[in-house]
Amino acid sequence: MQELRQFQLSAQSYRYGKDVSLDPTCLFCKIIEGHIPADIVFRNENVVAFNDIAPQAPTHILIIPTLHVSNGADLAKASPTITAELFKVAEQLSNERGLGGYRTVFNTGAEAGQSVFHAHMHLLGGRALAWPPG
Ligand code: 5GP
Ligand code: ZN
Image 1: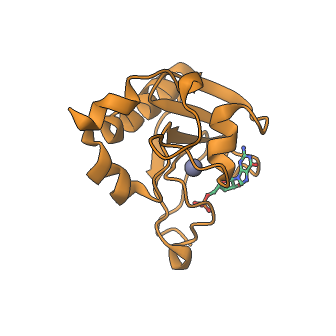
Image 2: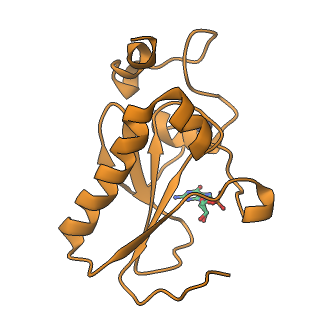
């Protein structure tokens, strides 16, 4: 139950320090804490979702865990539960917006285009999406 111990705290109760799960130098942790503004579209104790600042589709939302881990694989190791929650939130947001389909993406590593090293799922939709991606 170590996995759930910290995550059952409310996001607002997190504090920087040795036994907590946010990183004061991380852009997305600052968004979780409300220190940097974002257009937040969903929030619970484990997950925050907000519109991407440079949208690549009519719907482009970043869905992130309220703990600091570097990428999706590290999140899966830390919490399969929260990893699954990201997908459930993506489905919920898609349904709310009546999307005909959507794409979820985790960029992992700089070569794959990752620029923020706090795990985040991109939710893209609202237009036809080409394949293969660039
Ligand atoms: P990555 O390239 O790491 O997969 O995705 C990072 C995403 O974060 C990019 O799509 C970028 O537009 C978005 N982003 C970077 N800085 C900010 C910010 O300050 N606010 C918001 N809402 N999105 C950001
Ligand atoms: Zn972070």
